[in-house]
Image (cartoon, rainbow, N blue to C red):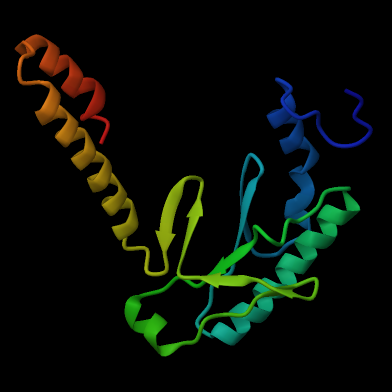
Length: 165
């Protein structure tokens, strides 16, 4: 496979080379930027939702321009916005309308970032619900299939399957 620009996908050095390749993206934006592999998040804070909306839109546009200049692209279909805050404050303000490249991003009440479900008020309810559902499924299996198993095997099964939760 010939690569003329960027990093070869699936190579051992791919993640490291990608991080080196995008290392100076921090110079393109003034807001907080979280990067993990090829996942990224722009964080803007403030009290005025209008200012947050304007700032996030301009920062996202700056990041998009940096990506274009470095022969990368921003997948606007996968790009979402979310407004975090207390439930009381969220009830008093409207959702934000972040725009980039003429497109209004979908404003969400919850997002998944690095495999973690985050809701607007950061309560963790969605994460807890997911863990409870997984635990209940394992407990149902446990009760159905361990009636005739010795205690040593039960303890081993428990430490492998239940303890991680």
